[in-house]
Image 1 (tube, rainbow, N blue to C red):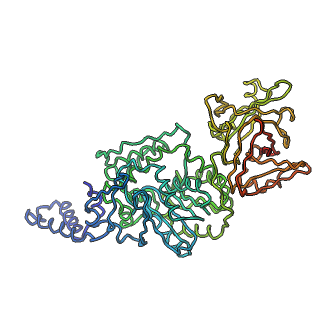
Image 2: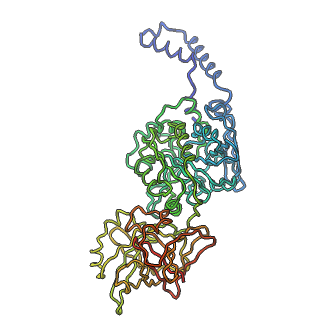
Length: 615
């Protein structure tokens, strides 16, 4: 049973084909008895056919007995993780893949990677998804290596030539992210030009956002990094029990699964986990636009001689069930990534390659401006369909773009999107505003924010007005020593339309007559410290008295397209009071901006960007 489907990949020998033709003619003519009535002779022919088939089986490679029928040797790491190692002979004579094997050890497991081109060249790191392996990059690696780049394509743990933990529970999103980070650290890779696709993007974009200072350029090809609100993940872990009743091959499955995004992917999770024979090559072929050769399909299957080797490719789809908001900090940092970024897509990939997904990333990452984001006539496995063209496009992108200063990885608050509503009231001769906001409770999606009727909100809460103050994005890395972002048991919540908010603080708007007038500081009740990391670019306004206000958040109230990277040149857009000036600088040491005596002095410019006085 284990080998049955793999056996089907063998080409029929001439004697088998001849026998089929003879039997076919006999059956069609109705003269079966005339073909041969001698049972012994028929047996003899069958024996000859079987013997011929055995004789033509290759001695090495993925279809050899040495690969398919090798003894399964289960090994165990020092921490008790059981794994198997695909026999080297399975990787002999793979078309287009004659790269030397390289290994590092992580947690007692070998992780394999291709390392081609000059070792002193700029690093290109290529990450694959499921159920492929570094074979996916065989068409791109030589072009980039010949151009002088050091091209590294790793095999995710459990895939390709890497060791294969046999327990599906080992394969979790956080574990694969940690393995890939450890790989980058062990090889001491810096100034990385990252190329990611499929699960390589869910892993790679997370790492690029967590270690942004290591990455010079980022290219996504049919990829994404989902953010799912806590408690809202719709995907369920499967049982991982092999179900012999599932007979649909990959092509039949993908043709029949639901078109609903969530339901369809859950079906893929269940199918991958339970189908008796998950054939990697069949999946790649189905989701590619070109017709792969039989030997190429076999090459994709090479790492997985039987089900014992398939825990990773069975488990990877289910890893989506473990993703919620842990990807949010990486998303926030990438929203300030100013180095070159490009998103290419296969136009036949209606999911990760869709125009809406491509545009989402182009709009989100500042470094995407001016890049040639293409849509290729390709499917999901774009590297197979247009590998050479994709490599040349990637090469042109690297050679035509310049890298700016590294982006220091953001803290938990950095570039966090949030919204506020100010509800001012008359209080003891002053105009004091309640400040309600989304930090920590809601992502303030644009459609939901736009749907709020602020006149209705003011009337509902009997306020002088309802002042929309968002969407906004923190420039600070962390809020320390206060409750501006953190939640506690006494936090008060309200629902404004479909946007959930909590009471953040109060602000005295008396000087501005209950409004938010530009360049007029308001007293805000707050006891926290804004903390900026060393290496962070900060933006400051100095008034005519020499007092310095540091930007704490920028706003899209007046300019819906404003990005973090635009703030360096913001002075050209501001109408500053006489004697005031705007500047930016990169911190050579950390910066703390602290409220004094429970009061912070906060002002805004005419675009709605907010600044706090350094006291």
